[in-house]
Amino acid sequence: MINSFEILETIKMIQKENLDIRTITMGISLLDCVSDSVSATCDKIYDKITGKAKDLVRTGDEIGKQYGIPIINKRVAVTPISLLANGHSAEDYVQYALCLEKAAQAIGINFIGGFSALVQKGCTEKEKLLIDAIPYALKQTTKVCASVNVGSTKAGIQMDAVYKMGQIVKQTAELTKDAGNIGCAKLVVFCNAVEDNPFMAGAFHGVSEPECVINVGVSGPGVVKCALEKVKDADFMTVAETIKKTAFKITRVGQLVAGEAAKRLNTPFWIVDLSLAPTPAVGDSVAHILEEMGLERCGTHGTTAALALLNDAVKKGGVMASSSVGGLSGAFIPVSEDAGMIRAAQAGALSIEKLEAMTCVCSVGLDMIAVPGDTTAETIAAIIADEAAIGMINQKTTAVRIIPATGLKEGDSVSFGGLLGTAPIMAVNPFSSEKFVKRGGRIPAPIHSLKN
Image (cartoon, rainbow, N blue to C red):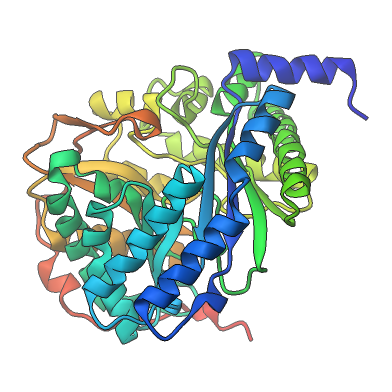
């Protein structure tokens, strides 16, 4: 039973500590939209999305107003388009992206995810066409997000796809250079992608998911930091317990909103993703949580250990609060979206190599990292391969969202605006990985994948 103290505590979290519901994401299956032509399939996709999600934005706004809880984004995730598209060229596949854009504009959502392909063990011709279409699709749309899964613990890493994605990232940056390379901010390369992720840019509605569901992503780094300010100099068991209790409270807010949205939209509530997703706003930083534990700057020695504690305690608190925890769930470390990460990178405390080590223990991976514009496709592919290897070996989701910033060099910065923030240009290793990534083939699945 909720008492008056808990109500006042939640109000304080919202008003002073940046607690919000980051997204209500409706997952929609499009498997029944396959038709005998591109135009007919697109018509069915448009009708289904605008039919199922027509009240999503209004409902989110009403819930936010009723409960006084900011609901920042309303989004849709759909079946990976490569599974249902039937075009014969990359140009045909761009038509599907334009259809998704048209539907997203019609219902007023912030983003739509699912211009995606799952190629962890190999590529069909349809998947190759979709991947080729990604740069052109992202250039011509503002709300469409793309993702490609290139590896998994069960399948290994498909290195041909990894090399291809290095080229696709470069091409996307070039085609969207006049808009700050924004296309790359809407493109994620995964290992072990999950089917119920409500966060962009990597959301899609998996084939094992129901017809239509509601997934909610919560946030609240500021709430966790404020909680830790009350236990200064306490030992790590106390720190972990404090984070766990705070994550419980945050997740309960998400559960409340998810259940209410599901009821009003007559759609099953599926999961709460309890990830700590930062923003550029002051007081809403995962890096600042780590620094509250005693680090002078995020990225110094001890950062990985602090992040491991944070990620684990968040998960423990979340599963106490809800029986429907899913998605990615943990602590995100997107550089451009976190004021503390930006400051650490600018101070030289945080490097790509340190971020890679941190991804071993956090949710997802190298996220919203800007690198010099002359970084080669081969280097980007090698960065993707390293991150995929971490995910494959550790049986966790990892990802790369990297922006080669055209015309910029280390020490410069690029601004994306809004939640995407500002990214300092980070140095990459100057030595070549070209011969490595051009070997092709598949890195075999690890021995611990054989569990049948």
